[in-house]
Length: 248
Image 1 (cartoon, one colour):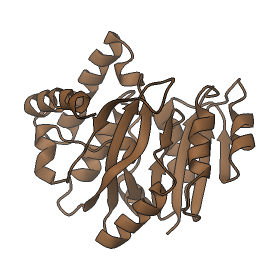
Image 2: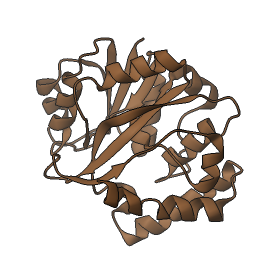
Image 3: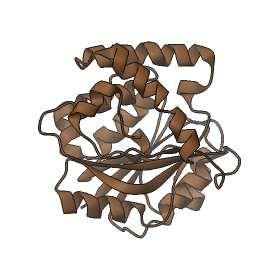
């Protein structure tokens, strides 16, 4: 199967080399790598071209934020499977994409998810948190369960049917989209029990108290929109993050 991997960038020169080199190292060959750049003013695009020979398509133009950029990538994708490799993340090793495809083939699933490490911004070998997602059941959504979005790879046909990111959410569009996909009666999500992505700490949702409050408000709206009772789900969703620091 062809795997479309999308990286959204904007002035990402400080981290993009690690990202694209981890893509370049993948053993799996049938990869369509799409860069969606928000008209960077630094040397992001030059660094991508210098460090990655597997880039299939570059879109460089102003956008309305990361979710708009990712939607552009989804619309441009031609692969059987679509996933995201953010510009400050990197694959854990060279067999990640192979393992994703093998897992999806083995289970005949609509999507695959796996585990994620949060790492220090300046030292990606130092683990801060470990997000062990575990197996999916639809009932878990009611208690705040959610897979790590950077590890989520789904068939493009589902994106075509259910749509991409809702741009009315500025921080929690990924949570809203996952609820929309997973809260279906016959959705099949396979769990790849291993770390596949290293994510640098310091994302938009927890960068400031203002963003944390905004993220909480958007999480509530996402739960309501997808017909899931929010007080219990939101409390357990946030409380469960404590164990990620313990398990690292």
